[in-house]
Every structure is written in structure tokens, then in C-alpha cells.
Length: 228
Image (cartoon, rainbow, N blue to C red):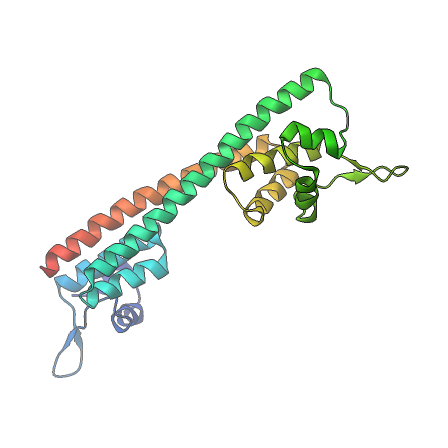
């Protein structure tokens, strides 16, 4: 069976998969040629189906575990990959919730007219201590300017927006280092609307990943049935 041609791979790639333990060890002819069977076809199909949803490293580890007859270990690897997807979905949901709340707050602020804020009133509005805002500033999450006369921190509308977003995400249990990339994206986009488009794309990628995992599960199950 010509596995390489059937899957659009090089012959060396198939050999590498066998040597890595992704495929079962093939028997050899008297002249040393590898003999691939329908079982190898199932194994290769399972591996290639697992990669889009789980990534190359996890797909490799799953197939290696199956080759060692450690099926429970393979299932655990799949479970952990699904858990990461669930974590990513929850992160997305938290960001979307934060943006919805922030958009509503921004609309209210726009209607009332906005004036720059000092650290005390902003901390009171958020329900945090001024020291918390200073900690966020040290982490680069908010960047208030300093009044040239008094030296007080002055929070402009974009600073207040960032502080509210950080506050919402912190309430969701997210660490500062995980919030920083999001704040950077908001600043780069110049506001929340472009970020909403990015979140739609993110949601789409998660859905694609989930469906790919389903296809991978079906192919892996077919291989396990073939193994018996």
C-alpha cells in the first residue's frame, strides 16, 4: 500500500512517522522494503485528522501512546486538549462580557460628557484601592499622564477605558500578564470596535478547532477498532 501517495506525503515523511512511533512498525520484505497494510492506513489517517484540532505535538503523543498500548494515556491527552479548548472558550467569553460592560459604561460616559479623572475618583468608581491602579500602571496596563504642576496622575478617556477593561478581566480571575496583550490590542486598534471583529474571528477559530477535534476523534476511534 502506497501510503505516501494516498495522503500526498513524501516517502520519507511516512518513514519518519513510523520511526517516531506514530505508525505501527511495518514488516519488511526479504529485500528490506516496508510493507504497509490497511492498519497503517488507519493509523496515518488518524494522526493526520488529529493534527488540525490538537496540534502536531499532542497528535504525535496520542499516537505514540496507542502504539505502546497505553490507550488510557492517549485518552487523557485528548481530554487535556479538550480542556484547553474549553479554557480558551471561557477566556473568550470573559473578554466578550468585559467588552459588553465596558461599551455600556462608555456610552453612559459619552452621554454625560467626560472630564479627565484623578486616581482617587477613578479608584472609587471601580471599587478598588488607588494602590491597585498604581500596580496596573507599573504593569503597563494603564498609562495616565502626570499633571505638570501638581504631579498628580490624570486619566484621560482611553486610560479610563483601559482601567475598566482590566478591572472586568481581573474580576474574571485573569492574571495581569494575561491581560496585557489584550490591552495592547485595544490600544493598537484605537478602540473597542476593531477588537470586536477580532473576537468574532477568535470565536470562529475555536469553532473550527472544535469540529476538527470531532473529526480527529472519529478517525482515532476507527483506528482503535481496527486494532481490536
